[in-house]
Length: 454
Ligand SMILES: *Cc1c(COP(=O)(O)O)cnc(C)c1O
Image (tube, rainbow, N blue to C red; front, side, top):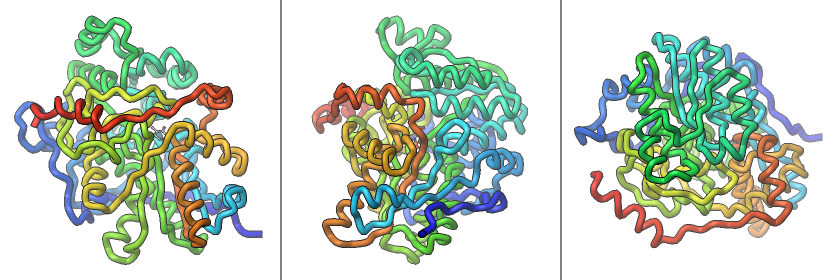
């Protein structure tokens, strides 16, 4: 029988993260200070982030960055994660393709987000910070950070998008179990929150608003830092443990991927899997590997957005980021893949996409649940609605292989499991879900308002 699962030992947990910027043929344009409109310096970020994270954010030169022992020690709870050959799915699709997935769903909180949460909480602790704050949409990032904060003895306040706070109580319970304070956003605890509530009393919240609230709390509270779960370069950096492990595991399987796929919210799990493989494309060793970011058609920043400077949050507190964006005030439809409802892509990914080094596809909500159900029934794991975008893209590539009679090797990231998202599956089975598309006109209307910012 063929080997299905490729496992590493604890000593194979990477010693260093891979900083892709050092190898990029064209570097991303600089982040811009929203006040001075000058390129941002690491010092500009020190009031907001830990110093280590701020330095990593602007590090364009060091290819490898050491993972602190305390972080590796905590990674040992669940890392290295398995690489699995999806033989059940291959059989179901009757495809000549070889499909592999990296299983990040085995973390204690059920997603890849813990890889960066631990690193960021650790740096805050090391620098003498006592309180941290963040935002969360569907709750995966908040859950990961709650566990990390407790481990390092930090107090955490999480601004959770109000609609999720009310409709998805289980991740709130998880955060509270780990000891975090969870506040529904918009809230009356910040100026940004009060402004929105006054203007729109029934507003159900968005990730952008929650970021504004968390940033405001961090900058107005002594010894409090802000921690972000995606989009920024240092978050992508921490996630590269995924791809570095997968690289070794693909070697064990005796294969190298032709296609690397991950779902795309702000880009952290995609970056984590793709960057280590991309370095072999840059070096010319593996020029033909293709990289596909799978995003929802209701929030298609990479496939339909504009490449320009925009804010990372709704209120305009963050630095200006050179990004593919739908506009920072874009309100995506309320799809179940809450972690993918973000208006922009990080600066590294945006530059790579602009230079044609990575590709993107958009996937309809109903297709993601169809793929998720096939995957659950053939591989036994119920995927997160976010991860199901990657599965749908992998299925589509595998079916192309069948038509073309080619046996390509496909690798995708299973960023999380869906056991806390069963309401979404219920609605799918009850034919109660729809597809949402955004038109070019709607996007143009939205991005037109960006002209005054830079
Ligand atoms: C948050 C999340 C995502 C999307 O975020 P990225 O930063 O794009 O990776 C994807 N999958 C899961 C399971 C998540 O929790």
